[in-house]
Amino acid sequence: MKLIYRLGWLLFRFIFTFYFRWRVYHPERLPLTGPVILASNHASFIDPPLVGAGVQRELNYLARKSLFRLPVAGAILRAVNAVPVDREGGGAAGLKAILDRLLAGGGIILFPEGTRTRDGKLQPARSGVGLAVMKSNAPVVPVRVFGTYEAYGRHLKFPRPLPVSVKYGQPILFEKLRAEAKTCSKPRLKEIHRQVAGEIMEAIARLEPGVDSVKRDS
Image 1 (tube, rainbow, N blue to C red):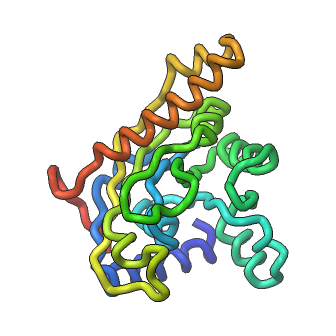
Image 2 (cartoon, rainbow, N blue to C red; image 1 turned 90 degrees about the vertical axis):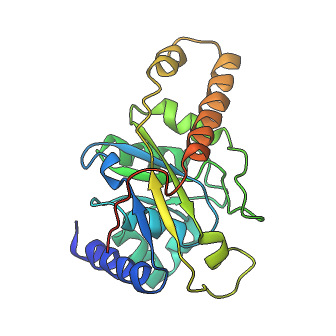
């Protein structure tokens, strides 16, 4: 890890340990090298650092491109591997930036739901994550965060010291769909994007805490 990234990583691990009393489930399922997409549900602003702090490798994060225009914020975002995207996280430029990080062997966190949940429940996935997956050869690791809505959902102005946890699932390769996507028609390709997005959300939904062995980082 780069020094500034590691300092931020250690800071968030400290915060999650002593303020949120976090638990981390199966971080060993994430490859430590090579391109990988972490696809997580999204309930809070603390989800990105929670997902990133639970694993032992640098990751790339999406951030609104307007923030990069601010001198201090922009410098920090670039230092911690943030990827500039538009407000909705889509667009050709955003997709190219994501794919560039993956082609360079990086890991990136994506939120298939596109935005934070308003009620704490899982939301339908947007097809954009399916497009990003099909454009790359990276494995997809489903990730589910728990407790972050209660701790710092969009209905709260300040984070509450409630327990949070993050669980990493088994990598998904989508080999058959990726092979089909190379030669299929445009209508079928759109169906594949929706199918992949849906399968990722199903994999996220199947992740439950406390039903198997637990590994806690601190």
